Amino acid sequence: MKLAVINGSPKGEKSVTLQHLRWWQAAGGAAELEVIHVSLEILALTRSRARLAAALDAIRAADALIWSTPVYHHLVPSQVFRFVEACGAEAGQAFRGKLSAILCTSIHYYDTTALDWLSAVSEDLGMTVYGHFSAGMHDLVEAKERDRFFRFMEGFIRAVEADPVLPRNWPPLRPVPQSLSIPEGSFRADLAGKRVLILADRQGEDATIASMVTRLKNAFACGTVDLQSIDGLDIKGGCLGCCGCCFNNDCSWDGRDGFREFFENHVKPADVVVYAGAIRGRALSARWKEFFDRSFYNTHVPVYQGKQMAWLVSGPLGQLGYLRQIMQAYAEVGHANLAGIVTDESGDADSLGAAIDGLAWRIAEWGKTGYLSPRTFAGIGGIKIFRDAVWGGMRLIFRVDHKVFKKNGTYDYPHRHWLRRMGMALAWPVMGIRGVQRLVKARMRAEMVKPARAVVERERLGRSTRG
Ligand SMILES: Cc1cc2nc3c(=O)[nH]c(=O)nc-3n(C[C@H](O)[C@H](O)[C@H](O)COP(=O)(O)O)c2cc1C
Image (cartoon, rainbow, N blue to C red; front, side, top):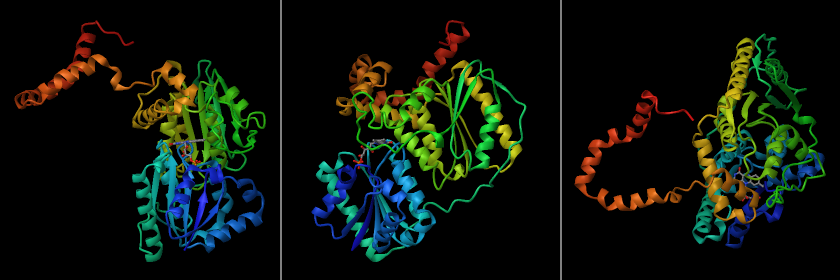
């Protein structure tokens, strides 16, 4: 049996993810692997039609396909996006009807959203997904995890042979009405001197997103609006995965293109950052992905501290729940506030214009008061994963992250609360007594609300403050 492996790691054979498959082969895995290093060879694949055709031929000749890729910035490396975009319509015949499996490694920070994207893209390419295997970065060193992977692959080989009908999870996208021209609006939101950066792609190509950006830009007054097209930025390539940024945020691309300079001079000083783009396939464009991957030179340091963040999206975002989740997580983990997401899914230019004005109002209002909404699971979960990963080992090389986490209180482990821990230790045996448990249950609701009620009472008596 022959399996085509789409290796999404820019590190090629040095990919941690790929080692799973190399180990499986060494352990007697019954298939020949045809590895296509799509990220490492992305320039050749996108510049030479012959090279792309050869890759598609290899996929066509295989009995099944495996995506083997790291998780990058909630999804997969931008080079994989580029490869999928480059395949375009020609790809259909090469992938169609095949069974695919998804193998990822990561620290489990939004691996779920990457798996969703890979599943949806596989199905769009006409493949069926056997399943996904999302391994921790260092899982392969554990015998238990190797055994788990072996079973996964055994099942995959059997599925290729048996060809069972497996469920499809991502119905084809229902298109959104195209090319809306939003009328000029008269609403003006007072920015009170704040600086807004609007970053947009496909300004020349996509009439709706261009029109959305114009309406938002014109809805701001008394501040500065810096409109930048990411297509025009000097970004020469995606993140190389070298982690050269680990010690002090240096990047291998420094001096070779203008990404860092742009990020430092436009993104970081802004009070408000608005991302605007059109859905391409199952996410924003490969160009956008490149932009976000490259911002990894900041490692895990939050760079949006206190900013308002918003998104203008043209396309079926409502059918791509994972993408909304990423937008929420990106703001919250970055210590920013998600002021809103506006899409053109209504198909009505007037109501879209009004929604954009409403977004401008919210950005200005929350920008003025410095409002940051409380974090949800999207942000709390993400920050805890970074906290544990950095403190638990990565801090040796991600030294800046460690220093920032120490300073900004990210290391908020419950075991630091010594008094509470002592109280717990003393109360533990007491709470084991049945009679005490009965009393506690009877008073549960009253006790749970007690601290919050006390605050209300203090406020009523004029003894509390908001700060
Ligand atoms: C640019 C970049 C972005 C990353 N983004 C994520 C992420 O969003 N979630 C995560 O859990 N790990 C993330 N990682 C960690 C990689 O997924 C992890 O190191 C992976 O095991 C690397 O696999 P590879 O050696 O096959 O490339 C990121 C790493 C890099 C370099």
